Image 1 (cartoon, helix red, strand yellow):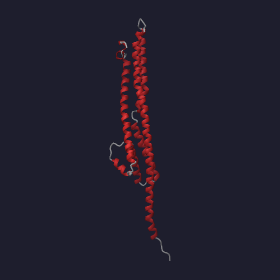
Image 2: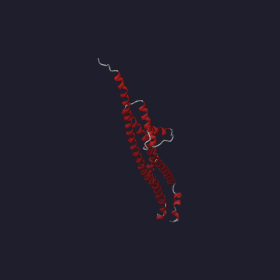
Image 3: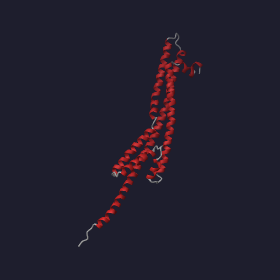
Length: 247
């Protein structure tokens, strides 16, 4: 490559606006990679925590003991936090002796709220990746159009219109488009990848919520049945004693 077309020199000799566009795209690219590394670590950690909690949940331990075990944990997240808010609502409504249907409806609402909040935390950064992926090419194109316009304006003032006179201006302008694509392509790929992983975790957590609701429904039915049996056992002797013997 000739010395006059050295990339560093072209960037340094570009117009102030094109240099500003290049700097903006460079910052966007760096910010994009910071988000990529953070989301990769966050999603990986969330998946591991969910798997560990599911193993604990399905180990056969009593739900009340499981609840007490995580009650004092300050860093609850994922399925652990979803279970905590759902079972807290179950205990609160069960203590007030609410009807079975009301208890289950209340637990389902709390589980949906907990699931939505955890998903918001999980997907934090996706909007920024989508914005960088969609806007960066156009920002780079803007820098390219401005640079080519300046190149042709300079060519119009030149006595001799040759390719050598216009090539540096066009080359420095095209660097802005290349930097826009350099920022946009990883952002789009990362957005698609992390969206798929986040949706997978959401579906897995939603299934857990359905299974937990079914377990609490069966437990509520069993508790009510035991209470009814005990009540009948208490009332039967009273009924027998209250009978009046015949003549």
